[in-house]
Image (cartoon, rainbow, N blue to C red):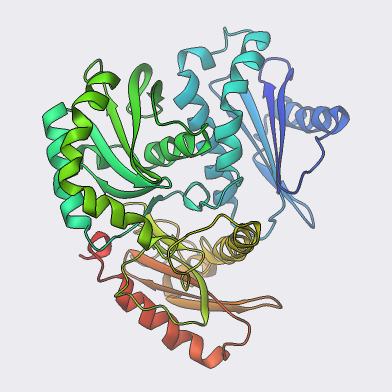
Length: 414
């Protein structure tokens, strides 16, 4: 659950007010004015107001481009401050992706900003949690590893070379295969690109302009999307060429050579791993994070067979497990476990808190609804949610066995 408030930096003019989760009512004008007034008062006293916490929520303020003040109120007061700050950064990156940097400048009037920012609501809502994805919350690109990933990877690389473009194949906005040029993008750019496409209206194909927030915030690229098979999509990031009609008329024919591999992709969802990877029945969800390259593998139904339905009960189960997984992640990442690949590996920096981050290799939690265990080895971190019936003493060996199996998959092998 969260509130996202946008105010003009010049005078605190309300630009938008979004409420995320459980049909929450919009925040009142009086509260929004108080939040802006608090930020303004601190600035006039020479103090930069960053964040604060209450018994049930965390509040974050941040000014962007001297144009926009974003205020995020999220009901997760126990996570590290860096989580909410980076989440707010990704929200602004999504706005830049859609509108471009030039529009988000101080000379743009509040009325124009208010109107144009409406185009960003779907993607910002997705980033803040209106989905079954975890990538935007943890700042990593979600992957899906299939049995025939090598064939798809080779074909994707050849297609990218032929069309001089960045190319990626996804299943439900999880990367199945991608060209080297695609991975050259900043990981946060890929995260917000995936959020943009996941939040859009279903379509067989489209061609939209996007501003890469880090690579090209002022000059737009073209983002082409085409459906290759059921829920399996081709994303092409390019300049003026190729045209969407060229891709549809000629480019898609080349994918017939790997049609069998494409049709096999849905069989790996929602497990997101090949059948040879065995997951103990005591594990209800897991997240494997590669901190070195900001990629992750996540499954909220690791015991399920091929996803043959979109039943409300299944969606409810996935969203509940997602909440458990993210609650555990936010409670330990940045505290017991480092948020960056190199954090806590070179000796103490500043006192006991730093020492805790350096020495924590494993940690666990026992709650009323679930148990959880986390393991860190080098750049990899695994967060596993267990059933409450799993004995606490066995969580370490069960999670360790899953870690050993997952780190042998190609994306995480070193």
